[in-house]
Length: 621
Image 1 (cartoon, rainbow, N blue to C red):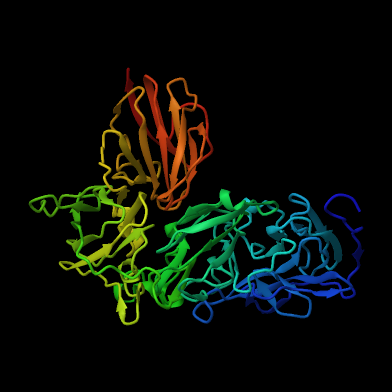
Image 2: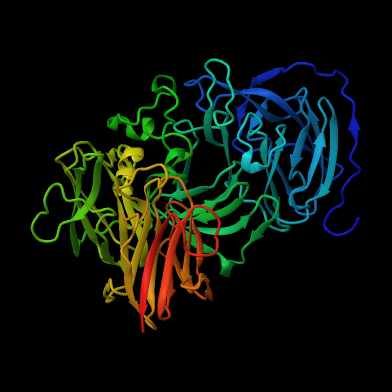
């Protein structure tokens, strides 16, 4: 044995009963990852896995099932996600994998617990193969299989549920019995142009095998330390957002390797981008009782898919009275916190009072919607700002915002990243405590929200009602919290939101910076330090934001805040950031004379400043 791992000689055994046709096992069981697979014998964890055909019901009995491939612990029902492998560091693990999928060779990735980066092995149809390893490093890892022999970025077919979690615990650290492990999975066989059997679904996205509103509800006491591990086993990114609280990111991995942060290297966030095949761990402490959500912030991943009838799924995104349960689907989980609040709500009157109008204008092509902050006399009912007016408040000062709905439909507002009482969180019919629930704001009605920001930074506010229409129409805006005594200077404090603009062409996809597809150039002063507040509120795409100089080289900036939480000790770095939907980054930038270009694009960074949308700066000496 050398190094951190010791691999066994792989052995292949011929099947005793060769399989000639597809055989579908019983319906797969959703796996909540509370119980680890296998058994210990003579100090060795032994796990026996079968890859099988099964039926999957992520919406329980509401929908018809979809036929997929999944892992099962031998002699037990298939699980989605696959069986959890969890051991202390240094444990010897021996896994046998039997391929009961006929006519398809199974390729297995990552079944070494971080021991070998992206290691793979194959199992012929009907064959069994054994793999051994020493769990050499603590962390969270992903194992996954494919019979289509595609990389994870293309694995959206019936083999996309062949995924499971591996957790290696550090020596001397007792695992938290309340810690939870959540695996995200997805199937999209429509994109493969398959002809599915009648009544089979072609799109599903789930957490631990279930789709909202059937996902698990988790509950904690106020003051508890909550620990979660997230594993993205899908072909696309997911920015996971927690309502009402900041959490601390304690590790980040790519599925085959994991980086555990030292206590002084952890960071706070309210949204964390999980790239395909990646993992991250977090912890947070609930300070207030109430109902909260954790969900992906990409709109298509939290609303009913339009390709299937509401009569089948039981969702109707246009039934506002049942919004929390019928207007959302997919990557959403409910969180309840109980007990006495650590910091009770203040009974003092608000020091800052704002009046925010939700308005609309029919452009002839479509109805535009936006938030308008009333300053003095009421603005015309059809005046619309996209993005909405900046709301500037002060840390530690109680703020009241009266939201007045001038739309022709109901709406609600979520104060993204703000730590506030649950009834003000904006998920109509769900946020709240006891009999008090966040209301749906009907046309012509209003609702007053109050909060006291605990930290200065950059946040956002946006609709949390019928997001596929209202968010796309422009109901989003920046929320800026200043330190006491600090003055907001928009000449040096610059906010840029990547969101939807007026153009709905397929080529542009409506991507805009501050509502403009071709933003007006901004004039800046060389040598002056600017604060750049960068927010992504696009529909479903992480954005690559780059700040180029005129010679196409990257400028330099310094990170000072993420999701409203200060970042200390960061160094000046090349001006590039990949920002997920619902994330906010603040940078300090001191430009040189000449021209500069802030670009927003989906793809990887390329030379030059051409891109889908560009904000030009003219920097004078």
